[in-house]
Amino acid sequence: MTTTPTPSVESQLALIAALQEQNALLREEVTRLRAVEAENAQLREQVRVLTERLDEVERENAELKKRVTGRTTERTGRSRQENPRPKNDAQAQRKRKEAREKRKSTVPSVDVLHPVDPAARACCPRCGRQAMSPLSPECSDEFEWVPGRLVRRRHIRERAVCTCGHFETGLAPTRVVEGGLYGPGFHARIVTHKMLDCVPLYRQVQAFHREGLHVARATLVDLFHRAASLLEPIYERMLELVPHSRVVHADETSLKMQKVDKLAYIWTFATAMVVTYVFSPSRSGQTPERVLGQSRGVLVVDGYTGYNTVTVPEKRTRAGCNGHARRKFRTVDDSGAAHIVDLYKEIWAVERDAKEGGFYRTPQHLALRVDRAAPAMAAIKTWCDAHHAEHTPKSAMGEAIRYLRNQYTFLTRFLGDVEIDPDNNLSERLLRLLALGRKNWLFVGHEAAGRTSAMLASALATCTLHDVNPQDYLADVLIRVQTHPASRVDELLPHRWKELFARAEPVDTPG
Image (cartoon, rainbow, N blue to C red):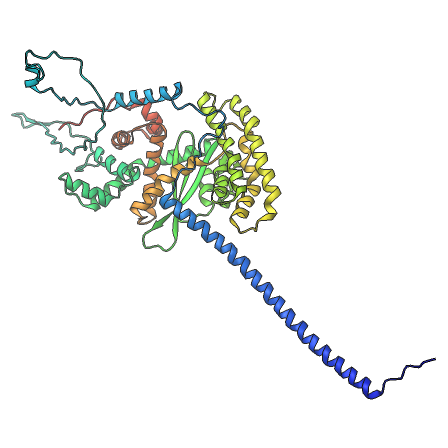
């Protein structure tokens, strides 16, 4: 039997020492690898954060480019390509004919004669033998702008005296303010040009100078604020009517104040009868709570939490804005986002078909929503539920999916109530007027000036809502409101004024 020789103690000690040295080296390598792994994890987190930031910057850059050079409308055309509208169908021809007739009936017509050369009429240039006989003229229309005119009225009041010493004087004209130099039409022109045409007062001063009237900007500021002070009772009554409406559309936008570091806000609360703007130095929920109070009904808004205090079970039901939800997907360059946008087309196709079919806001309209819009919304929700885990929360697609899933209950309110719109585009369009003006007049001087703009914009926007000429309305109401009974202030609201006081045709200003 062969025996294995026993290693010597010295060799065993040398082996142990070598193994211990190797173990120490391995431990150092493990420590180094752990440090590398930690550094790698940190780098991966930095890459993730930078990727999300890059995605956000690219999205912002794309939006800015679109604002500068791209389309501003979100319309994408008819969704049912299999049944496109003919280019020259009977309905389109009828609408064009109605538009032409409307222009002919409302725009003053001036005939400009272009006569035939008298020599040619007396003797034909070709044969030279006889005079030419007239034919029916060839007529064509051209719309041209003729600048409005500024007139100075001389009010001549007759006076008479008796030998007994008694004097009689003609009645004094009614003015916006006693002894005022500027008439109600002048006030109305300033207000409409600034609030509807977005022309700052200093530019209006320059325009008046070109027309021969030298007026200071401070004077126009005084007239602007005077008009608002006279319309304040009407504005307050409009605010009182908002809570009584079952469906209210609301939104808000920022507005700068001069010499104030923080932004102020203009809110809009629109109903079927009145459009009101409210100025607030903050974006807190106190403004909707102050306007709507304890009223019940439906409030159509976006996802902003400032409306939470008035959208509770004992107050108003919240309805969401699919326009906001769709817009978030439109900004993403992704096939999935394009799919969602395509699904959304059916929602607005239903609204368009109801309007064109003449059954808008009827049970038939609601049935059409249930039949076509409800499956489209369900498909959108199903896709978002299936793909939300594929995108990081802060990515553009992740934010769009999260918004839709969180707001889905509110976004589908319109499927069960025909009076609710699927979007909040009404209030967005109303705020666009102030947003455009904000680019021109940049800021308001102080809170009182912001409230003045809100009051005047409310009157003008409500005029537009009811197809009332705002210039005629202001020129009449600025005089009428001074003697009109306060208990009958409703008669001065634009829709009632149109029924009671509006003239059928404008009266020419005497020269």
